[in-house]
Amino acid sequence: IEEAHTATHIIVTDGATKFRRTPKLMVCICKSPNIIKLEWLEQSAKEQRVLDTAPYLLVGDKEAEKHYSFSMKETIQNGIQVRETTGGVLGGLYVYICSGVAGNDAPSTKELNLIIEAAGGKVLSSLATCKLLDPAKTIVLTSDPSTP
Image (cartoon, rainbow, N blue to C red; front, side, top):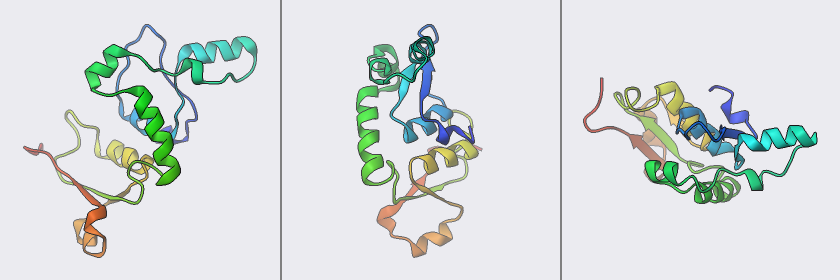
């Protein structure tokens, strides 16, 4: 997962495997609009050239979109726009992760840090540094109830 932010093309499914929202995918979505099907790689290899990704974008997976309550088409479009304007959905923002947020049903602390950084945010290791920051640009992640 440490190198996921360098991906230019993200093959999410082979058509048989169900779409899963993993920490690695969250990092990749923050960095690239090329969220595609395996078919793109197969056809590119067959034609011995890198094909345009548009016909192979993973849009319209109604089951996954309903399960995770999102639209891949909107996610891709919004991602392109926000990367161009602010450097990412968390561009210019600072994020502090409270104790008990990571793990269990959430990504690990390491994975959360990678997701935040891929989205353009800066992870704070302490709230003490927040006194120097604009509160309107600071996000504090907590859970209710917290987990050990």
